[in-house]
Amino acid sequence: MKVAEDQVVEDDTGFQDDEESFFQDIDLLQKHGINMADIKKLKSVGICTVKGIQMTTRKALCNIKGLSEAKVEKIKEAAGKMLNVGFQTAFEYSAKRKQVFHITTGSQEFDKLLGGGIESMAITEAFGEFRTGKTQLSHTLCVTAQLPGEDGYSGGKVIFIDTENTFRPDRLRDIADRFSVDHDAVLDNVLYARAYTSEHQMELLDFVAAKFHEEGGVFKLLIIDSIMALFRVDFSGRGELAERQQKLAQMLSRLQKISEEYNVAVFVTNQMTADPGAGMTFQADPKKPIGGHILAHASTTRISLRKGRGEMRIAKIFDSPDMPENEATFAISGGGVTDAKE
Image 1: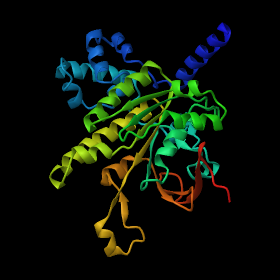
Image 2 (image 1 turned 90 degrees about the vertical axis):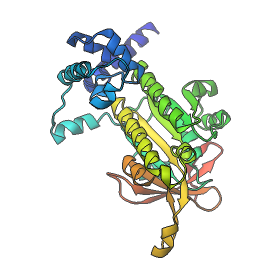
Image 3 (image 1 turned 120 degrees about the vertical axis):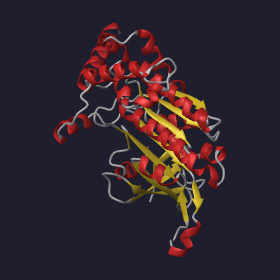
Image 4 (image 1 turned 60 degrees about the horizontal axis):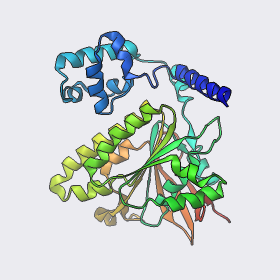
């Protein structure tokens, strides 16, 4: 067993070499003259990698208690020396994109629609009315993310942030039965947090970043069900709309950075609202996802879910950088999301 463990450790380090700037620990800044006390201050706000510094503005770093402008300049300079901050060819970038993995949804049709499943280093958003399968898809992904998959995907742990109190561990047991995996092991590999306010939701992302860094490469998926529910409650009326969208933009930016920094898949669900202006344009479905343009532009892939007959659900690619607009039918069974039986 010891030998096997050693092999795993060696594989891990090899994986890190491949990724060069992936998981470059912030402690390495000590070699460039940054003291440990300042590094701890950065870690306290969830900046744990050198890439994390590159992804944070000088203004945000100056807001960290105890960091002066001179210190921030020094930290930025040290991080710049350790990272390639310039351009790279499309060929070099395509080699980096080989690290992207896909997590199966449990339905082959649905996977095909998404080009293999839920993609890492990206935010995938699923929106629809109630009972369209958003939460069921979230629960299914909690299990499928742990299973080894295609193209050498090894499986890993999941973090689930619940804003609507819809997470049910018993559901995971049912889905685990379908894939013949151990109940306790599946539940052990899912870290759960209940968010009560939009601020709390944002604070949890600091914990998420710290956890992804602490157990580098172990976590593969972050789920937020649902992304907008608490923003809807905390900010009401048109007067607070600008502030809400600004806070939302900050959170989505943080999510995108986390997904790229640690190579994890981010899956979020979203609610719908009636569109009063749609009647004028004779749209067939006068409803739209909430969150406005901010959320629309932040999500890498957007999936629209709607009800079909019985347990059937229809998924449609609403927006994607590389997949055509298309539809797939799937079903919701006792074992989670599965292929629709014709």
